[in-house]
Length: 396
Image (cartoon, rainbow, N blue to C red; front, side, top):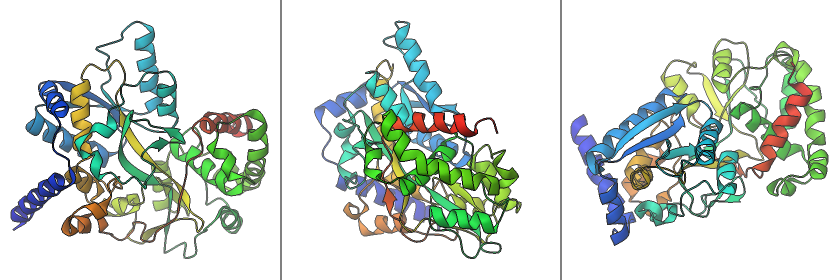
């Protein structure tokens, strides 16, 4: 029966894909022909078993369907990939580079785009672009226009995690977070910036505390930065003495916070995947009583993308992989909580009803209510924010 259901789903997904695609253009047929036999070195964060397993699955699919070999180059920091591309181009390696496809967003995209190190535009020519949800921020990345230089892959939103057995009433704003820390001394913290989740938490606080959040959508300058961030530093000066180890040490990552939550050291953890708590419950890394929540006024969210460096060797193969990752079948599998649980970038309403249902499944532990999505500050704020945080608190 299970096999029958799987085959039915695949047949249906392929049918759905066909419904949402325009006929293949002559150019796309040429790209597919060029891609066959190419090897695509996909540089992507390798710190998650579920993500790695999903990429392994995608590699098998693009190999069997399109004859493209997909190699996952597991990285810990995408900034290192950006530096590698910059180094290769500076050394005159303008073609046959070592990177064919990059999983990125935000400041890393901004750095590559500003230095003209991205191939394209190509993203909106992909056959599966027609099913993309244009109401999501798929054409800007941290307020920087994508201009077709990167293809959306998934969505993410800052989400908090607690345990019902110890935390019945979680905080729903920055102000309540501080009150919670006062009531639970030593039981809150956040990853140390420039860890991605730590910096994301800082941006969340900044959006809520700054007098004029609109200014965060513009490139940062010294005068605006000083005024906009003053309430944030005042908030952190109050919060840190109440934190785990009195704010003199910080967890290394969100994964470390999850373990500390499971061990009862912390009362709150955080993630950028609204389904991650459900995944952690399923893998027995968090208790079944764990749950997700957001702030009432909203939490920071964005779209993550894949891009092709200008000196990539397998540009055609990279586009074929990106198009497959954007397909309804691949997006539905990625959204499945038992696989990854990453949010889709497709307009689910354009898909047949049965496939819509597969995107809408919710499981215990996941974020079950809709939390408003707050836009990312302009990418230039990240470096400035991290530098000032390290200057003030980095010695701890």
